[in-house]
Image 1 (tube, rainbow, N blue to C red):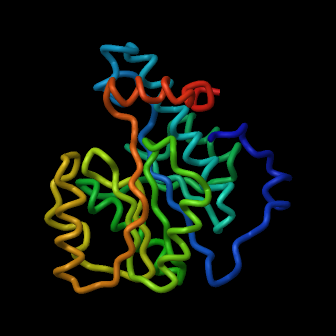
Image 2 (cartoon, rainbow, N blue to C red):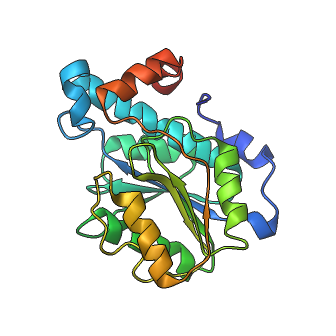
Length: 227
């Protein structure tokens, strides 16, 4: 569940992960511009309401990343890092801001992984659509890539909500039909073709469609996302 933003002083008091389990956490997010985010929910919530929901989900993802205690938290921003929402998130959560770079989601994720891996760190990357990811899920992913090359948490809609890497894997993000229900299946194929060690984590669900929003309400998670 999303708690209130953690004050800067509290972050230092949190228990950090042991060195063998530490990792950078990269959070991918779009700026909450009405009409450009959560468009499949706009007919239900209106463009402004859908953008407000998106902003709440981004804050929820950042809170989860910070509370995991794994290491530095990076917010990878689209279309760039100049939106005032991103600056507020950086201040509230102590995240560093980075513009997403690339023509599709695969190349943008590859660039984010290259940034962290080049510094010698393992990297756990999450999106901002999954309100049920918990800090423990991120810690499980970081522990998995201590012994595996990649860890993935599938999404119920056929994508995935988390991917973690311990080393560069050229080609992992190529040949994938991003934004479709084929993403996880195609990624499993890429993993097999590359011959790498992969750990699949529990399946989760994300919020994109009206039925996902109804589930968010039914499970009582909406107030926490919007708080």
